[in-house]
Image 1 (cartoon, rainbow, N blue to C red):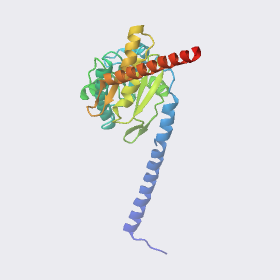
Image 2: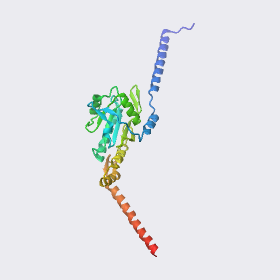
Image 3: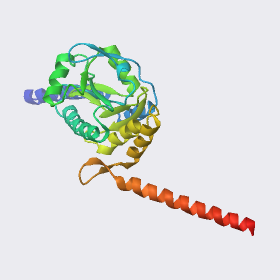
Image 4: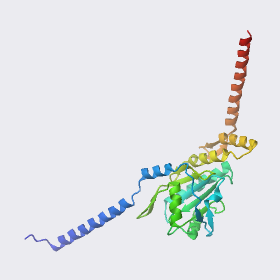
Length: 270
């Protein structure tokens, strides 16, 4: 009969137990695995979808309906407050981009909210604490929370997928832009996305509104084409040369057209 030394037997038992634990952990990881391609496809599929009039709580514990933001573009950032790196970094970068957007487009031209999707932790006092820790001005940027059912419906409307994981949550780093009619207009991805990815869609929405008078409408069209991003200064500025160049080009075409018309008339008479 084969005799196994006690210490070898103990090592074999420990190794077997380790394999069982590793297999269990592997199964858990598979269950919470985050498929980036699947998430991107889901996120893009909701472009043009009308977002429901969901009811959320602000940091004072008062209810806020999403319909109260209609009429202006709305930026929605989905976060969870116990995240130690990605969500805080994303929020700080978003804050910097939003400041540049307000400088270029005006302070009151769009709204922004952050919504905590960890329903067991992200309650009004925690959301307020998170905002203050990120040095966010709560008078112009609201941090909201909601119950599990509401977060589920809002996430579905925004095409946002998230899974519990050993480190918190796996989720796509997504910022959604909603137009003035409440439809998903654009999705922006990444923790430190390029500035124009957020501001250019906002610029198009703000300056292309059809609910303006003739003079303001023309002015907004000019601002739409002449407000450009300056990489050297890392900000947007109004470039008159774009308007002047366009105007000169239009006048040249007009003069050429008039001259061509005159030549055509002379040809007909001769």
